[in-house]
Length: 294
Image 1 (spheres, rainbow, N blue to C red):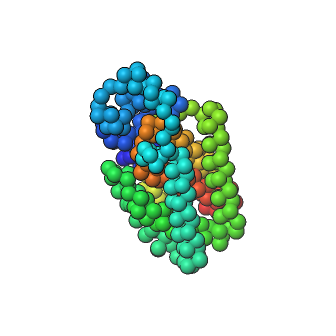
Image 2 (image 1 turned 120 degrees about the horizontal axis):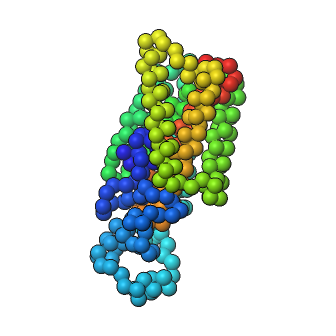
């Protein structure tokens, strides 16, 4: 699948093979030798090969390109940070709008529509991840479905535990801000080893949750949703969400540097939304446990 979030097996996000919009899997700050973003200002970048007809640039041509005025996104059609911010904001606004609709329309005890929206969002998310081309409408549909689910489940929990909604929102925002500051300051470096270890932990975590889900269907309780073990699992889940964000940041940075098409900013927005939804759900669960709700 094609996003950085290991929940959907998106290791090596945005990589589609030669000639397509590959964001790469190396570190965002120091590209590996031989990667699509190494070797001069263009190197082996597939976009550079397409733009210049596959001809290798001479030193004189490179010098002229360095001296030329910087091209803006409208001139090149390349993704910029402004594109990513705008698309992510639109995706999150869609999610919040759908969540607000669910909050005001659905009764607190009605989970049927919420579960249906969650299943539909999962299916749409899979389609987006497997799809070769980026589909902005599908990403917005995913955001709306996911928002409807989050709005319904948040209302139910907030009815039992007043104030949990704002606590979860503030907690999610704090994690996002902390990870962004840590990444931009260089305290977190997305290296190949960092990615391998984090992805392995994430896979183990998802497998544990699946085993717990199956066990619960047969009446067994592994204690993952309450007590000290539930708190530990919640903290690990939030930590993994922060890890997903760091991968998203690195791949966005690498994509911008590598000249990814402007349309790929929608894929970046999708990845960030997935990570934020993961953190928010784990934050809700952890706060519910801490406040005494199983």
